[in-house]
Amino acid sequence: MATTFRASEHQHIRYNPLQDEWVLVSAHRMKRPWQGQVEPPLLTTVPRHDPHNPLCPGATRANGEVNPHYEGTFLFDNDFPALQPDAPSPGPSDHPLFQAEAARGVCKVMCFHPWSDVTLPLMSVPEIRAVVDAWASVTEELGAQYPWVQIFENKGAMMGCSNPHPHCQVWASSFLPDVAQREERSQRTYQSQHGEPLLMEYGRQELLRKDRLVLTSEHWLVLVPFWAVWPFQTLLLPRRHVRRLPELTSAERDDLAYIMKKLLTKYDNLFETSFPYSMGWHGAPMESEAGANWDHWQLHAHYYPPLLRSATVRKFMVGYEMLAQAQRDLTPEQAAERLRALPEVHYLLGQKDRETAAIA
Image 1: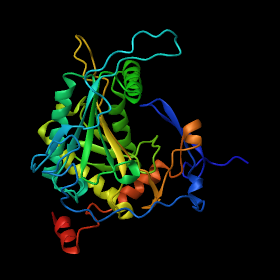
Image 2: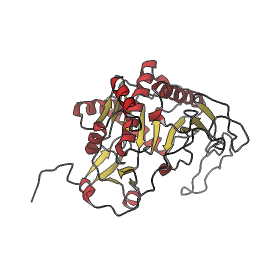
Image 3: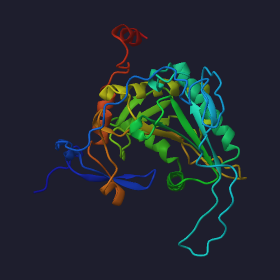
Image 4: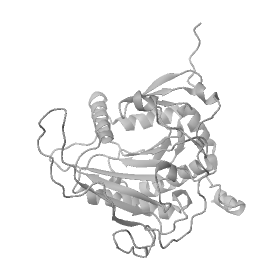
């Protein structure tokens, strides 16, 4: 018997126009009991300064260099880089099934704060603004030499981060990585067909529909994408057409720090834990070729957190996801509703701090 379709009850597939892929949404599976892996409780006690931690001020790193006693952000070359500026080229291929090309670049590490026992949501807005400025500066610096500059943060051991000190990585490459190539093709095609940037129109539509919005501010939107794969995945978008981080105005950078603090506080409050995630910025390639036009690009950040049911139950990308396509249980609309309802004051703050923050 035919029934009325309800996204919160009936399985369906959704298209991701930004990365040209589909996701299977199976909301009814949230009712099944969980008998799978449960992660160990997350480490909550971290020393403020550990002289043996290579990211701390004054610590000696693996290459023998001693970190300065920095008080804000600190950028340095990765001691174990995946990309190096000088490497020989593989040469021409002797068969179309065995192709290799040159890969050159640099890898850097950026510490956000001198203390190991803080994370971005526990930093002040001015401290987060300093991180935003550092992101913009390193993008401009490395973009003068390389077409792609990838800023990314892996937060938490669950996402492969072995060092609890607040930091991110920056990899600049001589080539456009796969995801960047897909986003380039999709945004260029949409602009040519519809006359405007894909993510500008998408942001406008989400503002009208409202059910996937998490946070809005004067200059920024945070939403759970219609095509989200990870349970509480979010997309961070500027309201104005901006192609790259260095193009942000001072007001937009201030507002970005403000809305990032709110979003990451909500994440931590969801399961009252230091919420793990991988995040990264995507902006127009930094090509300097004459006549290159990148106006179809819109700057954005992706947040991919793995937690699903609690602080110890995560989503696994295995089986069907590896062999067929992405699949999710919780609908994006349900995820956005849960995130919207969460307080914007961090759960670790005492009652007095909560009251002060609420007044402010």
